[in-house]
Length: 240
Image 1 (cartoon, rainbow, N blue to C red):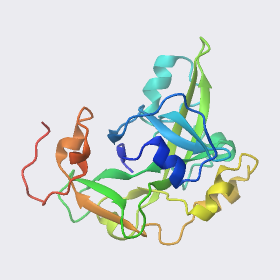
Image 2: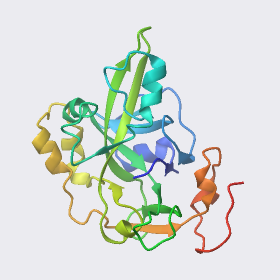
Image 3: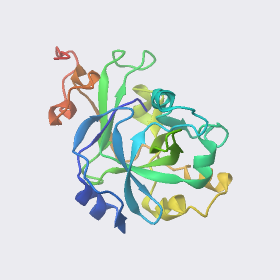
Image 4: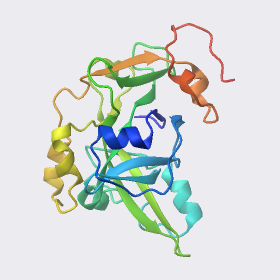
């Protein structure tokens, strides 16, 4: 999964769709069609509680806020194949897992597929299959700066792409079926092998559709519903 996604549902809609029990936030995040690394995002953790985190997991050994923030863009995604082994991710994988509500994500075509390289695509749930956000597997942690500032951060878990999605890009996020949510969020379940089993999903691309979108999404400053509007390949697009 690349470094952008969209959340087009507000806190109330997420609260209802995921049957949440509590809300840890004192403010709501605005809708965002172009979420980028280090942005504040919603996560679901613990006993189905809604919280926020900065996108990009901060490793516990970071020594200052500047290096911690700089490191986040390199830790927005954790590979399911190695998450239990990587020092940055393994403790959070055992202890502090979460769900990230995602209405759709962007992927840029690689030269290995059948589409023009770097062409952006928007990948989202087929409305005939489901209307709520994806339940993307994630992990979170808290880092304390030398001055005592506590930063909650999170990463999205990815896997090898399959089916038509593999013709766009080699990776995709792991979508958790609803019947696995409680086990995944359970902080007392600290068996890495059991957690890895929860990430093994049959038909991981089921109910997902992809369409090309304007290269306007390439610029973080651009936002709005037009970013997910389908285009015809070959149609002139602009960053502005």
